[in-house]
Length: 343
Ligand code: FES
Ligand SMILES: [Fe+2]
Image 1: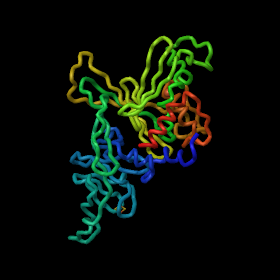
Image 2: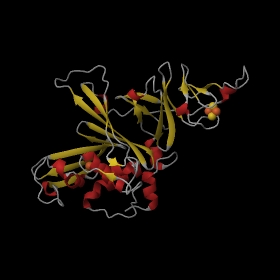
Image 3: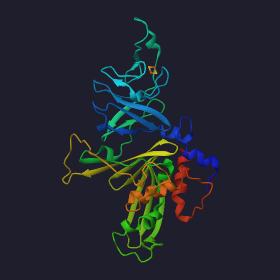
């Protein structure tokens, strides 16, 4: 059980909050690169409680700016792009990808006023078919050198998951909760084995669970009675690694999370792939109606990810951890909370 203050500390992600500042020390995906085209050159981005605009100018430069125009606050996501940048739809103030204001059309000819205007911009880079942004203090670190992002001997595919309508930390705690696999996902985990007792699911297959810290995050480990061992690390702070899949959870704000899966497919003979251009699969909503939250929607229970979304969203927009009863298998969750608070 946590105090209200501790719960706030782990879950609030806006500027100036402890978790928000921690997450701002990492590069985070803000969009699918192939979605930004000449026909659709602007995209609104919600990340860590900020509203930003991702855009591509007519020279092909891509930028990420505060969406709120410095002039009088209109959304730049409605702006028009040209060779030099993006012009606000309201009065045409023009910004380049660095956030410099290049022109304020209605000012008198020869006015240098635009030189005094600066729009907030963030560093951006493209990796595994996604644009990644860094919202923290300079200098920006490198993107962590995880093999699934950087290995050259294979292809990648992006699975763009439906928006998760709850706080990011619920998904992260689930990644350190090994016991739910044998219950929540029993049909899948059992690979259509007959399950005699659906309350216990496959729990009796398991000998023990272990948890430990590793240099890149936290490990959860299942040891089965048949000797099999299963390890799925959390790549701190916001990625679950499962086999060759990286499940990236990007907090949009305190109660919404964007989820991308990046799956790596190694080539059979170790052959190097020079220009990997990951295709994108858009996953259909796991609930109906898709834009409502529990208890005003119904989540599907027929697939692993849908089951996880059910577990995460029905804990509430921000799970109230002042009202919980942790048990012995929740040791990993306690460890994740401690490490997150420490960092
Ligand atoms: S509000 Fe953007 S140019 Fe006026
Ligand atoms: Fe799960």
